[in-house]
Image 1 (cartoon, rainbow, N blue to C red):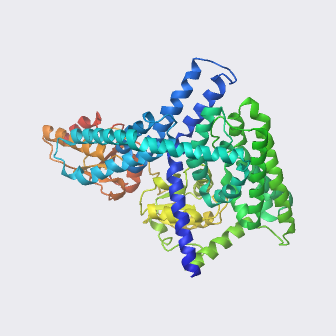
Image 2: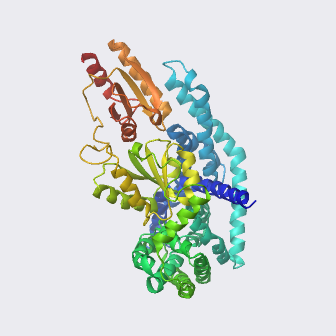
Length: 589
């Protein structure tokens, strides 16, 4: 019964994380646009630092059109690449024009919906289109499906979403008026440590906060999750009263968390002593209470949650209130953490040992060894390492930097990168490093990959194990290893060994098909009898006789999948000027 209940909770948590990841995944890549809007608002509106009536006219169109369209475009791209992005943006125009409120939530619905519809169309009809009609069918299908969804959004979805947005805004306003908003941190702080921080901030609070900021010039909602005070208080307490590696690593973690804005760095410290959940909850409630009491708010979302980013988004009349809320949140969190840490009579707070013990206990509960899951014996096949987290930024980027340095010092020529879980592709040659809480979602996206689960991206005992095991793989180490990007062909190459051409894609299947059609036409005109096919990059085989043509942004991935093939990167798969040169070389070989 307990095991079943645990499994259900884990499955539910994974589903919630997945939903939150999809929501935040549409917003986070566009945070720069939100920041640009916030800066323009802070500087040029009537109450800004440098009022400018002409430049202030940028504020409204950016809020009503640019930001929702970027969200919809990104959402459609997440579902079906470039074609999904275009249809998603067209579909979102229906809800944008059909509503009087900023359509962030509508864009989050219509973007993926447009991507899904065009994906289904391609799945059904792509292989049935006759040669020569690909561009015609693809363009008209995108346009007509986008048109239909735009009309649907204008008359049906837009009014519904508008009513829901107004209802949620009224609910938030009611909570604020009842002085109950601080209680939200009782749920927000634990949810952050369960890696729902991006989902909460960018999936829920940022869209609602943008609506509020458009009306009142600022919003307290931007501060609820982003407040660095609670995490700062915990780390300060470990710095002064902690023991062992937790004490020695806490000062560096403060810089990363408070100045760098990477809140994930303090999560393991809280997990190490579960009573510290009370500290971050108390600090969050106290900070939000102070924000509300003093009328604090930000112009736009602060991302990452750095004190620098927060102060940059703070209007002049809220500067003292924002600083006070951060200080109060840190002070309350520090005092509670101090009591909990000093009351603990254990001899040492060994952060790495705690992480390893937690990892071991979780692995044993699943019938695995402490150091590996069932597929971690396949290190000999690994030719790339990917750090995967919810958003593909922040903590995973820093973890990748740590391991990249270790790999380089060990003389191992394997690329180490970071990625959002939603952007993972199934690759049997990839070693994916992810956090225990995110493993279920990551393994669904890349079931063939080798996985290593860690508790903390910044300081995991697994990294030395990874380096040791890869060092025993001759293909990965020493002078025989070769950087995977060195074989990428930039122009005309030696094509003597080529006997067929493959247009490979990761997302743009339609573009690859059109490029293949153009290549077939040129080959036919030049009397060159080469076969041309289309394939996903993940399905490529290492074939020395194959010429692989890819979009230049995807060439390295294709080269990693098929290192012996001849690779040709192009800036535009559909209309590349290289194709005539390629055919000329093939004809004269």
